[in-house]
Image (cartoon, rainbow, N blue to C red):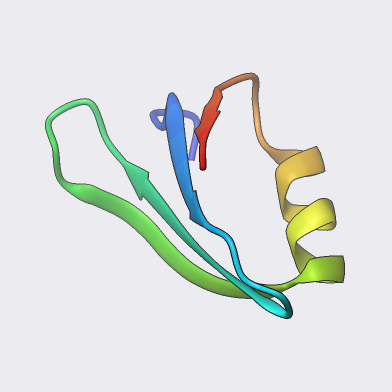
Length: 52
């Protein structure tokens, strides 16, 4: 997922929806993560902008 430079996060109490677009606009990933999973996932990503 190194081609993703932006991660969009929809905030909620227990579940977070993530969207990672590629530079051409196509979808690299869409994920539904718990709070614990979110922290682990973001820690593994390369440096990028996170929009909430």
